Image 1 (tube, one colour):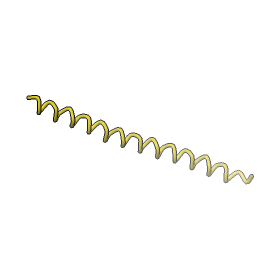
Image 2 (tube, rainbow, N blue to C red; image 1 turned 90 degrees about the vertical axis):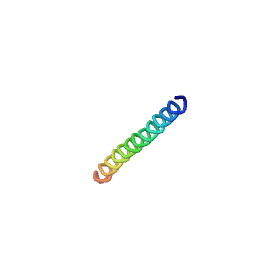
Image 3 (spheres, rainbow, N blue to C red; image 1 turned 45 degrees about the horizontal axis):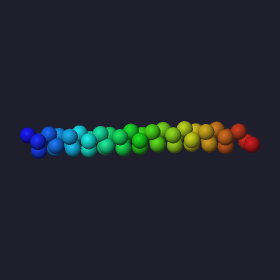
Image 4 (cartoon, one colour; image 1 turned 135 degrees about the vertical axis):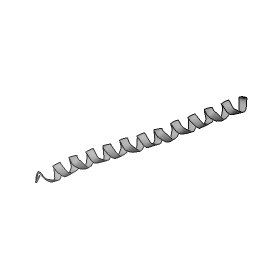
Length: 47
């Protein structure tokens, strides 16, 4: 009983870490795309 509870808790912890990494990767991509859009608009003004 104790071993199965331990394995379940470890599995849930691992899944939460993996989903957290995916979320951070998506946030990083969104920030990068926003920065690229700002850079392109600044380059297009002709200043």
